[in-house]
Length: 499
Image 1 (tube, rainbow, N blue to C red):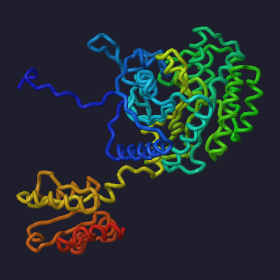
Image 2 (cartoon, rainbow, N blue to C red; image 1 turned 180 degrees about the horizontal axis):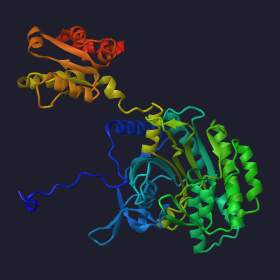
Image 3 (cartoon, rainbow, N blue to C red; image 1 turned 180 degrees about the vertical axis):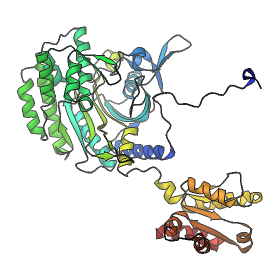
Image 4 (spheres, one colour; image 1 turned 90 degrees about the vertical axis):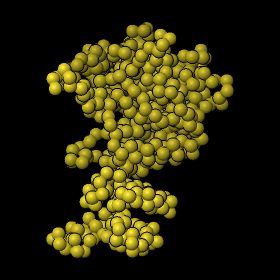
């Protein structure tokens, strides 16, 4: 066959910045989402789902990388020549939904949502173009009490995920305090000033990743990263850079001490006063809710990268030293955050609609919990799955009935091996690769005797460690028992409870 006659075979490959998720990852993420949604519902939030695509003008330009080509989103034109884009978060679609249904919804409207979001950004280690977020928002809720509720809600989500005191903290700030600092260093209030402020926000938001030197470069003229890409800086002078760095380092483990430090920094500014009043009110509500300084702290370095926040902002951060499976240190940092965004719905309605919300990145959070040996998505498969071997293909219906009996009696997962071979060794290998806990075998001998053979793969693997010869293993068959067919369910339950 000539090269011209060969059929086209595409190369199997993933687009950069997107990932395939295996079953253990998917299960871990689902468990985390369920835990968070239970918290949201207990606080009175109700579910909502919005579409993946929104009109681009409805999404707005609020991304940290909105100066990149395509404005940081994946966009296309519809057949009516209107630009649509995949949502970059779940908050902008909520603002559109709220504006579209404003007259019929209660205010505040308290909703939660989880789902994939997409960002057309430069991918890198741990930075994907598609990821899952899980949000709760209160739209139409003015005042810092609503922000305090969201911060307490974030603490509850961290606790529901299994984190203990000292393993996490929610760091809180108010963007108006940074506005006061920028005002003090002469940042202009024009459109050019808005761009400068956005670049300051992006720079400060990278403090934990780039350190003070990297942030100082981005606050000033700009910075070239390790790949050679150059990011233009905010253009602050030396005094302005020092003022911003001094401000972001003025936090404290005690909320009251941090407030005292901030009062010395921004007390002269109207924006600063408004930010401080909000933090004082938030502190009072958190105290009444029993949220300690260890769980929620005031930290001026928290500014959040999205451009739509207008007041209090916060981030949930893990405080644990984690290691990968290979023993390498893993830095997780922030796993979620949020804040007040009073202008998003106003873009549609032309009137003030206050709003505040909390969101966490499901994949990053679940991955961190997995490193802690929590939220292991394969637990149910390892502990409960039963594989019924199809040793007599002509009796496949009987094997399906047996698997159904196991599912119906125990509620635990069971499947028939459909590997396409009646070879027992190959089917056992399949069960092992599936991570099954039990194998059920019914061959001609068992069927004629009214029996079933059950093999506990977990117990068998442990017992086999002390057996040196294959002959002994074949004779003893560790973890394997043959019982009357009517005793199958009781035998499975007994073996489970014994481990």
